[in-house]
Image (cartoon, rainbow, N blue to C red):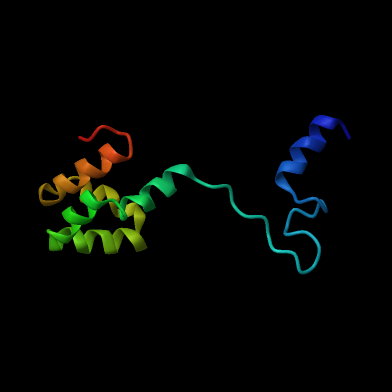
Length: 98
């Protein structure tokens, strides 16, 4: 086997080469971290975002829904009642707002 293929396989499988968690009893390899997901989770700790959520019952319901159904974000982005929250979140995520 070429060294290039060995390197490719080593990134997809654990050191034992099984690719499904290794030897019996080993935990599966953790998924790579998603920096954007970490940023999104951090939004809820931001004081400005917290204030916008707390001041708007509709925003509170939207956040609760998005924690369970993140794909619903598109549904909320067009809601005029949520625009201050959407704009602040986009700005903090580095998208400059809408």
